[in-house]
Image (cartoon, rainbow, N blue to C red):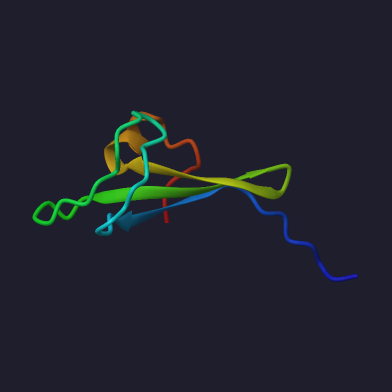
Amino acid sequence: MANATVMKSRAVLRPIEPGNSAMCAHCGAPVKFVARAQLKQVIANVYKDGQWDRVEHYHADCYDEASKPYGDPA
């Protein structure tokens, strides 16, 4: 039997791309692209009981305000 990898929730810091339509999981506002601001977002893959459940998006500042629920972003 192959070694099973237990997946756990994790987060990454990425630039906000044009056309992004995600809503921030912390404040509920859109995570919007602004051409001159070069804003960042945190994207978290959320796993429950070792299985993928959902993706959550955060403004970078909101992720910090939420006490980094999925750890330091990569």
